Structures are given as structure tokens and as C-alpha cells.
Image (tube, rainbow, N blue to C red; front, side, top):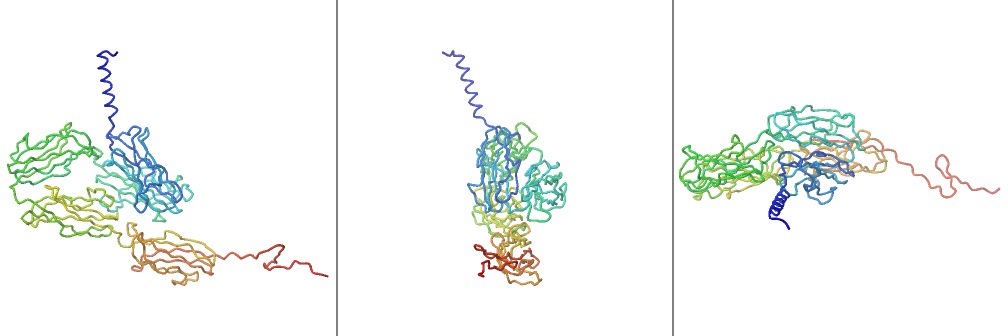
Length: 584
């Protein structure tokens, strides 16, 4: 029988074990560490795509963290087949992996890895399935993060030929797009390179103080269709407390303010979870007070956020609320709430212009104008309105997507923002919310469509050789805007140049075609007995400077050999010879 002291000791050990068994490290991020943004030939598996999970301190998580994989096909639909595995648990290095299984369907597939225990922690990459040609793969340095003022790690890209062997001595050009969406000709360690004996080229982003996501693309110098891209995100090397929402409000005397939400970020720019934050309040006289807030301390949640609000104050004037990290008084963020006379309450916000616009890639929208009115039906002046933007994938874009993310209404009660040009097509949602009453909101959408046709390229069936008397295989062209988005609904004129140099539209299966939803059109050379090299020419009917061509070669037809039958013979001209014995 256990003594009382031993019983107490056993109970304490069990409690400690239970607490430790329930504890799990806080997951800070999941990133792509290998195989990101690769290209693979139709019918072949991709290289392994490796993801790493790190804890809140940036250390690899221990074995056994579950991760789910999702796959979007080139049309953007989620599919439940096509990956080697759709879930995995981290190994001793905090890594999981999968790969795209062989497929004959061409296009860009999107692979998304998500923590099973926290769906907000996810990362995506792309695998492009190509027809038999040169393929790019980012083998290191893809989708990396770097602090302001430091060079990125080398971004290493490999090229292989159609046999999967290194493609040596091939010129590759690099391009750089800044966080603003502008292409620039400085900022990389090099803008061109030739593949080495391993088929590899590399560059890196040079140190910059401008924060945000930079896009680096590598393109085959001899074929701009063959390219691959990756990103480098430049972050501030420091922690910060920022006002997320509810800043600089104006509230009627005696009313509570809206929630004032602060976000605590670590030095990697990621949410700092579980940190104690203290709030302080200074009244309009400049005196610090210990009443008047709904909370004077709080711990950051799983999004790194804490909140409080100013409770109904009767004294008019400016109140300052400050959030300070409990373990570091030098780290703080502040905002103001102005208490005013109880004027007519705002009752509605409406969209008055700029509704449901459609804009081409790279172009800003027209102004999107909202109006706030009070319960008397009059315009409300000086009301803060916050704007939010959600992209076609449902992700919030918190910077650089709108010309303004917050504004105060003018005398006419109006505020406006504008959608900034992007190269990513799809429907974007803009929502306007009254800062002091988040129940008052309205929204609209901006649909980004492919821009003006800028280039026409052969994507299938070029440089064929076939026998006389037979038709060529299909020859496909793609009409694209400046960002390689397919331009639909445009008429393409086909002509053929014969070996004799004559140009006409005779001898083609189609002489006119309208580009489909992907910008593609198709024709082929019909059967002909005339041998030689034919040039198939495709031209945009609306702009004859946008054109592309390819050649096909018609060779001599194979001879039709006579049937020898049983005991038959032929002479040198393939004529049958009578071999029967004549009578004497």
C-alpha cells in the first residue's frame, strides 16, 4: 500500500506528465524548401516538393506535425487525385513532402500545404506540366524571406532537356518586378546567365530597404514561353505593435468606442502569439487614468492580436490609448479616440459609383465612391471608413492593392478608393466599413481580365515533317497580353506560304479562328502532293503587327510496293515478271 507521501508524489508526477503531454509548440510558419515553382514534362512525375514547419522561434518543429496537401488543376478546380500523398507528418527535420504524379494534361498546377491543426498556416507553390521541351525548376532559394538591407540567398534554377539531362550552355534572362508591380532593370546580382555543366543558372536579389514581395522570373532567351518565377519577401528586422483596426475613431459622448485592435509582430513580420500586452489611457487633460477602458491587459491570440475599447465617456476631447509589450516597455503603439457631442447617428453606407468594374491587367480601376449618411438622411462629414480587398482566391490583400485603405468622408459624406493594376486575372472584392460601427458596410467587385493582345506564339505543332499526300498535325497558337494571360474572342487570320513563295489562305483546315477562353486557336496544313517547306502564318486581324509563324516540311511519299504473292518476281522497275516454264 502506498504511503500518503508517496501518493502525493505520484499524483504530482502524473499532473506534470499530463501538462507536458498536452503542450505542443506554437507553429509560426510553413515554407517551401525544395522543389518549388518547377516544370515537368507530360507523362513524368515532378521532383519532390519539400515543406518545412518551424515553431514561433524559427526552429524546425519536432517529428509528427500533421500537414494536409491540396491540389488545384490548371482550370483552378480542386482535385483529389494526382499527388503521391495528400497528407504527411513532419520528420525529425520538421519536413514533409509530396510530388505531382505523371499526367498528360498540360498547364500550371497549384499545390497548397496546410497545417492540419491551424488552417491559417499554409503555403502554395506551382508545378507546370509542359509538352516535350526544355523545363525549368527552382532548386534552391525559392520563395525566401530576407531582412531589409541584406542580399537574398542565391536563387538557383536548373534546366533539363526532353531526356531529363542538364541543358548546358543555354542563355537564360532574369527579370525583376517590385512590390508595386513595376518591372525594373536594377536590383539583381545579374540579369543574364548561361547554364553551367549541371544545367544551372543563378542570381540573387541585392540589398534593399523597400519592404514587400519581389518577383524574380527566369526566361529562356530563345523561347519566352519557357519561364519560371519565384518570390523574395523583404521584411523589417524588428518587432512592432501596430493598430490593426479601430484607430482614430470619433464617438458620441456616453457611447463605447468600437474595438481597438492591435497586432504584435515578431522580427520576422509574423504574428507574435501568447505575449502579454498592457493598455494605458490618457484623457483630454493629458492625465493618465486607470479607468475608462474595457481591458487594461490582454494576451495576443493566435493571430497576434489584442483589443480593448474606450468605455462611454462624457468628457469631450481626445483620449489616447497605448498598447505596450509587458516584457519591453520600449515597444508600443498608440491611437486616439475623440469624444464629441452626440450628433445624428450614421445609419448607412452606400456605393454611389464605380460598381462592378471590369479592367484589363496592369490598369487601375476608376474611382470607387461610397457615401455615409446619418439617420436624418444627410451626408456625414469626418467619418472614418476602412477599405478591405480580397483576391480571387479568397485571400486578403492588406497592402499595395488599393490606393487607400482608410479615408474620412468629405462635406458630401463621400470617400473613395481605387483598385491598383495587377497582372493576376479574376474577381476582386472591395468592402467599405464604417470604423465606428462595423455593422455598417457595403462592397463591390472589380474583375481583372486579360489586357490588350500583345503577342502571338506557336505552342504546339511547330517544325513538323510529314509525307506528301498526308495532312499535318494540328498547329496551335496562343494569343496573350503583356502578362501572358490568354486573350479570348479575337479573330486570327491564317495564311500559308508555299515552297514557291506564294502566299494564300488555300490548303489550310481553317483560315479564320476566334481565340478561345485560353487565347488559343488552331489550324493545320491539308494533304498536298507538292513537296517542300511551307510557312504557316497567324496574324491578329485587329492588329497586323501581332503575328507568329512556323514551318512544316512535306517530303516525298513512300512508294507503294506491289504484292509479290506466291512465287512472284519483279524486274528493276518493279514490274511483275512471268516465271512460268514455256513448252518446247
